[in-house]
Length: 396
Image 1: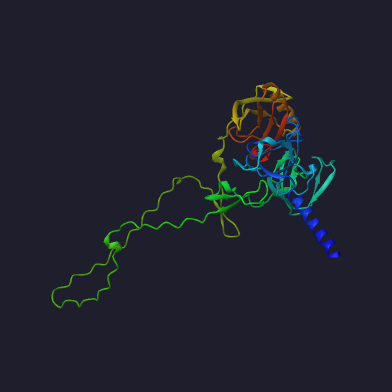
Image 2: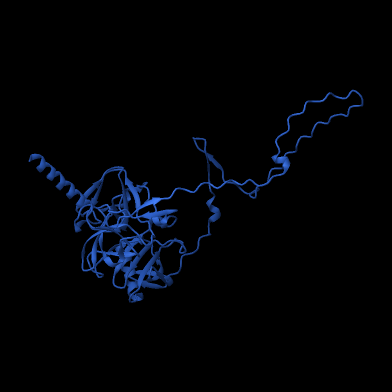
């Protein structure tokens, strides 16, 4: 009797652990898909999925599902990365268009993670010195922190905010391998009893190497080398012709460098013996374009609309505004959002998204912008800045 009770207890524990691992199902979006904070297309935008991204879903209600990391085992909506319309999530991957996101970083000392981007935010966790994490969704001097194995870009999937100035670049985990449909000569095989949405695959062996074809060569090149002939005795009769020594080859004249006659930057030899080339930057003086002249004003900023375009991507129409902002002080995040919102209200169209790309003085307006603020037809949905674009300007 005691053995029977023990057996039933072990069976129940195994069943419970299996249920925890198998909650919900694995699915793949068939298009770029928005994640919302609740089960409604009017709920706040919190992130997005790319076509073919592997996710776990559960708790379907009114045609909407809670979306989780594929390895999530906690069957609780509090750990969802967002909510999405179930009709765009398929049991099999039909297309795969990954979009890398975030940046892997580490810290040199312990760093607090807070509930909001402020020192007044409640402390949620602490990063240990040397710990590698992923960051995205910058907000001024703060950024949202993710676990290093996070695959879903959503601000509901982060673990909290930390000050960005303490991070340094780090190496992240190996990227996800290409799906079976993308690998060479992979034959998908559905195993019986493998479970819903789980597909295994067998890789066919590589083909035998093709025979190497050697082109026909002249007989002198292909014939075996003849044995060395024995030296014959010198004839006794007849005068000998003097043997002339071959003339030494004349060295080729050294090429004259194109910069001959011009002052050269000196080579600096470091203590390790390596040479460091010093670039003469005076040659590039005056090559930079002048900043555009502002001709409009909004929210106290003088600006100029450089370009307005309209494109269609993944079935969504985007209006893009390239704007030069004339300022002597680096704008704060809230100020940029308010400024971009004013432009959006003037240019928004029903059913179309709008992106405002902001350039600051000293930047190359033909390159990446400093700030990107995106809207749908009803609200602001995303904002980020690229600090590296400020190198060489008066701001950095």
